[in-house]
Every structure is written in C-alpha cells, then in structure tokens.
Length: 320
Image (cartoon, rainbow, N blue to C red; front, side, top):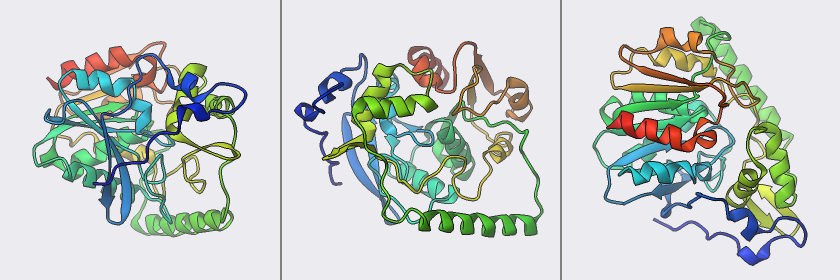
C-alpha cells in the first residue's frame, strides 16, 4: 500500500501569526503510527492507525466535515488500552479522494471496504456524529464483523422523521440528485478560501465554538494544506452542510432496535451548531434490549474532544 504524503515542513509557517510548529504542539496529540491508502472501488481512502499493529482492531469513524486527525488525542487513549485503532478519511474529506457525487450508500461501501481490509474477526465499531450513524448502519449490514457498537452523539432526533411511500422516496431521490448536480455545476473550478492558520482556526471555531483556539489551530496543521496563497481545508468544495446525498439522518434511529451486539450510546446534552439537538427521551425508546446509554451534562456534541479521557475509559470498560 502506498504511503501518504508527509506533513508540511514545520519551518514553512506563515510570516505572521501562529507557525506550523507552534500549532502542531498540542498537548496529548499523537499522529497515527501508520498511514496508508486503501482502494474502495476506485476511490482512494486515507487510512490511519494508532497502536500495536498486532493488537485486535477497533474501527473508528469520524463525523461530517471532520477527518481521522480529529482523533489524534482520543485514538491514542484507546490504543493504550490494547487496541489497534483504525480510522479513515471519508471520501471528499482529508487526504482521501474526492468523488463526482456523494451519497450515504457510497460512504457505507467505503466503511465496508475498511472493515474488509482488517481480517475476518468481529471488532468494536465506534463512530462520532455522522460516523455514529455510519457504524450503526454497518452493524446491521455486517453483523458477522461487529462485536460491540459505540455511538458518540450520532443519535439524531426523531422529530423530523417521516415514513414515506415508495413512490415518494423515488421522487425525493430524483430531486436530490438533480439538486446535487446543479450545485456541482456552480462550483466548477472553485477552491476553498485560503487563509493563515489562525484564520482557518477562527472559521472552524464558528462551527465548533466550544473548542479551544489551540485545538483548532492544531486541526489546521492536520486537516488543511498549505500553498503559495495560504492554507485551505482539505474538504471537497462541492460538499455542503445538511446532508450526504438523498438521506435523512433521523432514519438511523430505526436501525438501532435490531442490533444484536452490545450497544453503548453517548449523548452530550449541551446544544451547539454541529449537534443534532437530540434529548435522551427521543433516543431511549429506540435502543435495543440491554443497551447502555450515557448522557453527559456540560458537554457538547464533540464528546470525545471535550472529555477524551472520560469517554475513552467508558469505551474501554464497555468493550472488555
């Protein structure tokens, strides 16, 4: 498998503001021990691993507009518990390839390709936000490959859920695809707006207001790339907030009751921009028998970033 490109030269920071070396020095952050590319039906996925390569694998899926590097504090804690933690940049995110169009089914196929590359034994699936939805669907699609499911604030509210007739789903699929194609036509040749490390951190802070500037600047050094006119996030400009193809995230709740392995759901109770706005009473009726559910007071949507030690210990105890 081909190695991923190396990180930028630490001496190549902008003339003013926070330098690469200063931003990269975030306490507790640890870049993956191994990185490589995996082919998923023609899409190259950037895969990251932490921990002993001979340890049992644990799958870790990031949220929308994130990348595997957002686990650089959290994943090493799981790896220290005796796991080979494996994550990947979803298509259009980070160092993975961009695609002509994006859909929920394509993301699921990519996840299945990563699982398929990790031997044949069952393993824990852990996912945050959109990644929590992904691993919930993978749990039903690949029941022979999962030993436990951990969903980190990827539990959407049922308030917007709708039960559609078949002809209505077909019409919605057509309309959604038309909208995506029209959206892409307007973005031909476009790039994300460049900026300094501090400027990109400030922009991301508008969506992640609970995150420290030090953490946001660190993320720039991992999830953005530098060119002559500044740094740009490595996210496909054609991707947009509010959906991943013709799909309603609330439908993931309907995937929960039939899961036959131990399930841990973790929900941050403080509402923020990137969260689902879900409250415990909206999730509890859908949990499978025997599931464990933890709601965290004073914690927002990014539970694994705000409280990495607490959440990592909770997962390690659960999967034992």
